[in-house]
Image 1 (tube, rainbow, N blue to C red):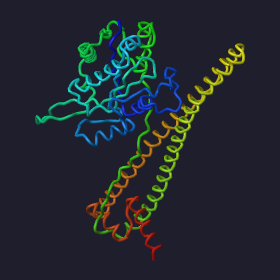
Image 2 (image 1 turned 180 degrees about the vertical axis):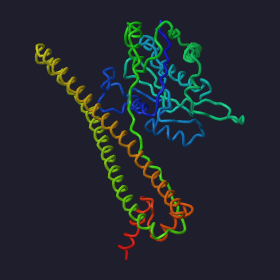
Image 3 (image 1 turned 60 degrees about the vertical axis):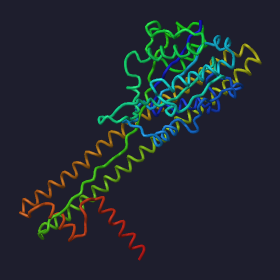
Image 4 (image 1 turned 90 degrees about the horizontal axis):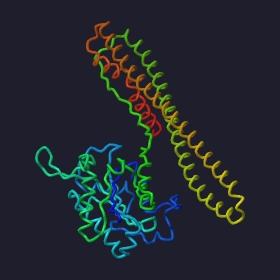
Length: 417
């Protein structure tokens, strides 16, 4: 007996475009050996996305009044895969296969009152193993806010609320397809498979191999480690001044300003250094992407060589396998070294950036304390009025950034004159 199979995968913004490349068949060369390019034209959409998944999601947010606190690692889409084994689809034929996936699509539209507008894409693949439907949707829940108003909220946690949420999905899906006349059995329970979760790609393998139980017991979920680089932000402090500045204060104040200007130049030098490090990090990232592209090309080259070697002599198979292993080991080594160097640069940048923030904070703190000390020492009154009067009399701002902007504007004026 064949099983009614439905599986769900939660995806962040960083993960969805990779799924789109596969689902929409945008890759020039497929590394997935299960894909038969001569049958790709048979694939069809039940609901077609016109843009990439990220752009479709941004468009969705713009056109729909939905709420939710989304962070960079938030789950913004889910991908469901509906399928069964090849025997089932051979038995029911092409027309019933299409009706089967149409019913799967209708099922999700109605499930938990999701609604068709929250489905981003639904494509049926007939060129890769057993026929299957990839359905991308935004996990929206329909709830009431604190004032009792009906709202739509993006929240994967609430959509899949409860430890038995997937069991309920399996039950509802099985009842639906069975009620539509498809002779299938319910998918196996998690307790029987000894599995908590596995990826969409792994489910494709399940539909293509007879030793299903063995695969289920051996597959382990590995979460990708994706790293992430932060933006540099400098807090600005505004200062004001006193009305009167005594003659004996101006000279040391001028000296202090010169020292501050030197410090400012030093800080700009450090910022420039940081910028260069970031550029270098981006360069390494581009090199890494190029290596990945070269690796895909390498796979195609290896396939071509394999075909030629088989035609020439079976004795060459041994040498070919050794060469292939050497190329793969070389690629893995280059990738590892690049990742290691990239992470080193990133951690160094983060450390230098934190140090720079401390210098800036200490710098402004020392200036404030110095001005307060001057005012108390010479009984000059309020420090803000003192600073204000100094800037007015000398036409110099104690805020280095404001002073530099002012000088740049004056230079522009001089050039215009």
